[in-house]
Length: 253
Image 1 (cartoon, rainbow, N blue to C red):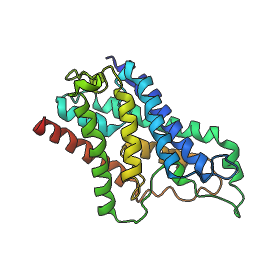
Image 2 (image 1 turned 180 degrees about the vertical axis):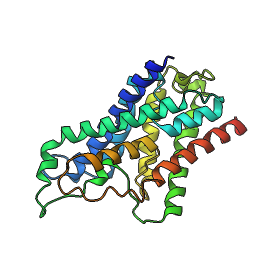
Image 3 (image 1 turned 30 degrees about the vertical axis):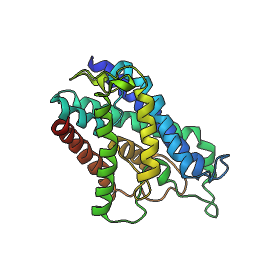
């Protein structure tokens, strides 16, 4: 696939993913939202549907990685690293764009957050934060959760029973035909429900870093800190998880 296809697919697909994901977090968090306080299950499914929409949109162009951890896992499995920087840069741009679109969609609600008496924290709309701050524990959580994402994605390619045919070295092979994107979307929902409690399950460096940058730049009333001191954890953990997934896959399968 061409460089242009990779850029377009990953930018558009990741933007859609973050639009849905940051959008559902805004819906649940902000005052004057009809979905306010609707809960963690709503957030988990919102992110899962974001993966569904973004990956199906991007798959014909770029394979629909939408996640540097997935890109790294595939590179370890296939040995093909040449396009990795282009994928990751495109995913970061798409994540930033998607966060800006979510802000625009909830612009009136963000403006209403200017009232200090009723202001809601906004960083959680864009990026993750741990419930108990401990870099080592948080890093382990993100690594495990990412392996729970990337290793099954790689293994899906060996399971003909779900209609997926992997083509070694081809990015689109992580999805093939069949219902694999739907399965990956449900997998993301499951990770959110089961492993999201400690850190908010970034499991995707672009998903956290791009929106965190948007949060720091956008004119959001009462937005508070962007917590850059924690920002390395949801980048490093998923990248380690992606690397481990590729290594485990090559050893076991």
